[in-house]
Length: 327
Image 1 (cartoon, helix red, strand yellow):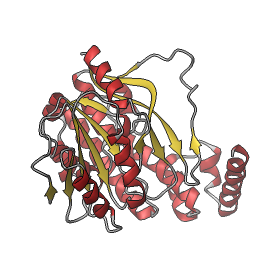
Image 2 (image 1 turned 180 degrees about the vertical axis):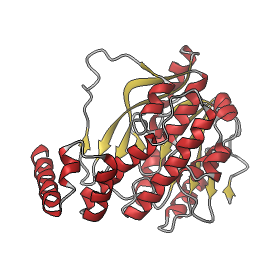
Image 3 (image 1 turned 180 degrees about the horizontal axis):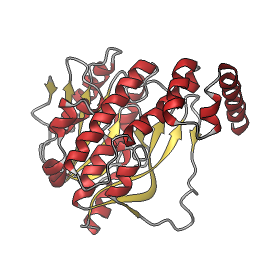
Image 4 (image 1 turned 90 degrees about the horizontal axis):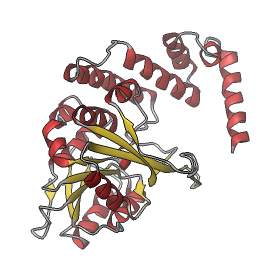
């Protein structure tokens, strides 16, 4: 179901996409972060909700009623997952030169974000898309900022398609900003839906990087929430295993689009095994930890400790003590 007022602006300069699922306690802050943008030109917001059951949709309808010219809703009648939900949001965008994104549990914390990215793209025609740095908000409400990490005089960096292909998890969609004409032409949104892509940020950056430069802007434009359960970060090992399997299918599909990129059938599987091993250790699931440690190979102390229940528990205890010291 699509909720859109006749007052909705159909030809903005920038369209902002939000995807949400059971994020009632956070979605308002996400929307407010976009509405608070100090941007000189018209922009709209398309929000796609993945059949939330916690009251998120009621909050969205209240915002849409308050901002009928600015907000359009896509309310899924059944849960379809992260990638398909995001693709439906993109399909519902109307007009515009540029598109920007935010997840419903995160928020834009820099009021000048849109203006900075718009001005940068206008000045750099070789750039088809960009992303930025972020602050992090943990489950205890502590904000982690390291605004010195890029040095005293940070400069934009180019991220190549090859670099993206070889690293699966270093991009966050909340900092992304793309040229809409190229996005509409090249990003295979139907595949995100049909193949149930488990993520939207990495494959989109990978595709767009084939048609121009992707730039990293060393600014902190959004805040990313840590330590809570979401569709992107499930709490159940079985759900995470299914997500990783869809990721393997996604990886193989993307290789068919770009066959010249170096391909190894087990590349994503190795990445997935590492993620699943980390999750198994964190949740104390010895059987799964042993399974995925064997898949990773006995390369590090972590993998070797997972071969025996006693050393597995000792390793978990040492990790907890180390984390407490760092805090």
